[in-house]
Image (cartoon, rainbow, N blue to C red; front, side, top):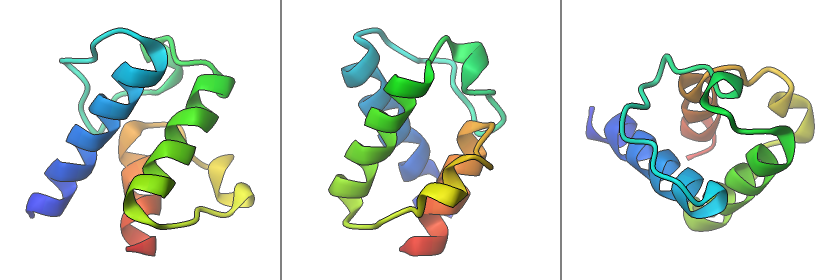
Length: 79
C-alpha cells in the first residue's frame, strides 16, 4: 500500500525539519526515542503531520505511540 510508504516518508521529512537532521534509515519498526527524538520534538512532528494531512490525533492516543509505525497507524486511522 503506497499510503503507508507515504506516511513513513512524511514522518522522515517532518522529523528532519523539526530535529534539523536526516533520518534516512527510519522504518516503521524504529523506536522513536531510540532515534533521539525527545517528547517536545515528537509533539512538533505530530502537530506538523496533523496539519499537513488535516487530521487530529487525540492526546490520549499519543501515549500509545512507541514506534514510527504506531504513529503511522494512528494517522491512517484518521485519514
